[in-house]
Length: 102
Image (cartoon, rainbow, N blue to C red; front, side, top):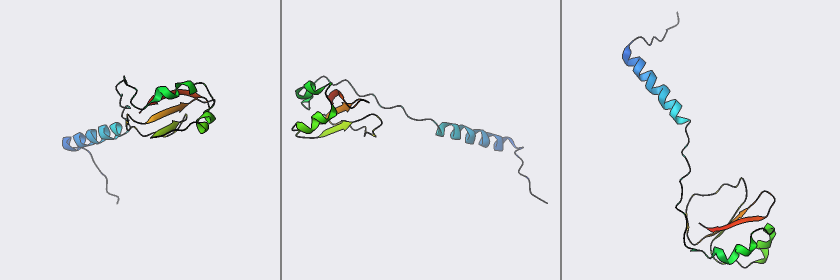
């Protein structure tokens, strides 16, 4: 004869409710942190604003000193903020759409 599990006691029901709540919460994801707007050009991004709208290959002809990150759509990107790093954001059509610090 097979043993049956009975959830008849109120303590067991409370435990089950807590477990269901924890499982439901496990599916939630944290929102991306919002960084404060950058007021200063701490990385020299303004020096590269003339590249906005150009093909991404234009970066191959530019001397870039210091930390640089090229971000394409769908790229995995760390969330660390580095005020001295220049970010080049590339659009779907492989043109430079933005240059900023971080």
